[in-house]
Amino acid sequence: MTISVDELADLIREIEVEDPIDYGDLPYDEDDLRRLVCQQIHEISDQAEKLGEDNRTTVLLAVAAKLVLENLVLHVRLLQQQGVPLDADAADLLRRLRGGSR
Image 1 (cartoon, rainbow, N blue to C red):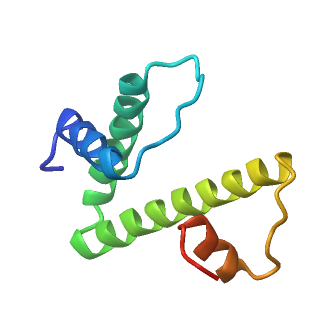
Image 2 (image 1 turned 90 degrees about the vertical axis):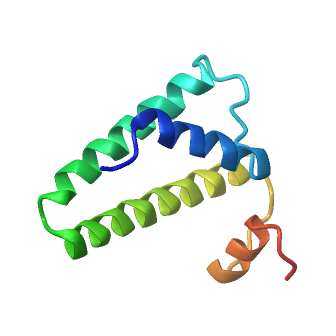
């Protein structure tokens, strides 16, 4: 991979300026968590590189999609725990979570 773990972590930090992550009261350092995730993604990318560029891109897209889906599921579970009524339609739910109107 052409970008280092630290550079990737810096990019995430920059993105978080516009789209912050609520770390709440997690007992972990935010930078340590960023670095841990970036190291894992870096390793996945390095392994996928062995498959050729097209397959590498496909693997990275699949990993990104899986992570977004996992984040969505966790977000919905959090809303359920808070007693927030949920939309029956997944597209409406996604629009709402993105901050869009119905």
